[in-house]
View (tube, rainbow, N blue to C red):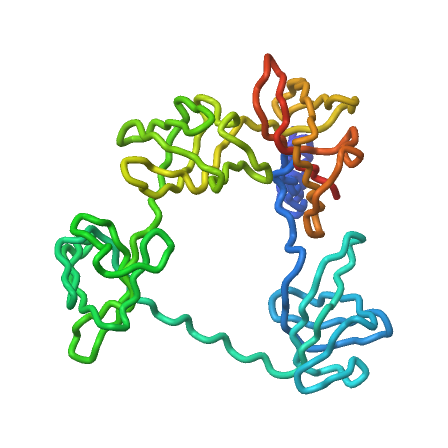
Length: 350
């Protein structure tokens, strides 16, 4: 009895010890296709040069380890040194880089010399609100946070209405304006610019025709007219009013023209599919979605295909780039049960 108790105690001690010494098992995050973060394809980084060969350049950074860059005869050197042959270990450098399709990171520019500290951002004073009063010398607006605020107006004050240069007499009481101003030594504020921004509307499409469309917003129904300058788009696809289906969410930027609102830019959100291509045919593809459903997607000559490598810049693709096994994000019009006409396709490649 005593012996079995001793054995049991030893087993419990070994079990407890293993619980403290065994490394914790790492759980890898699961990513759906298209949701995994993509590294920056290009940028710049600073550090100290540590190694240089005929084809590579290594630096030691403060927070990002010791990246190795490829170099060639197109790599430029500037700053305190003008040639790659003059760069030595210990030099402070800033490397401008581009990630190539083969995964190598190419140093396009090496700037030698101490890195100048970033300039503090210039403070910009601004206020927004509805105009309470305005004349040639001052403007008073009703702001949401600080109540009424007054600003002086001078000959140097710039006026902008809907993105175009305007005059002061085009600003009326009741208009919503943005004011950028300077604070003088005596504490008074003088407007450097006064602008009426282009109105923006968010809502859902209720109807559309060849010359316009209507959306429902929190404030009620709003109607818009379109012309040959109206840009209608979603993601990489440029569309028309026929693409504005009932129920689609939209953001509209529009300007008044008499009693009408003329849409300048319309961004709409059609249904999307995320998944992996199962098969490819002449007229379309079959996709297994992340919800494990099978979707039949038709592709037309107007479908925009974008190839999105994980470590290289995106580029426009073609139908030959669409292959089975490729993760995809697709936006388009629903044409039936588990069926879509694709407006755009993102191919998520390594």
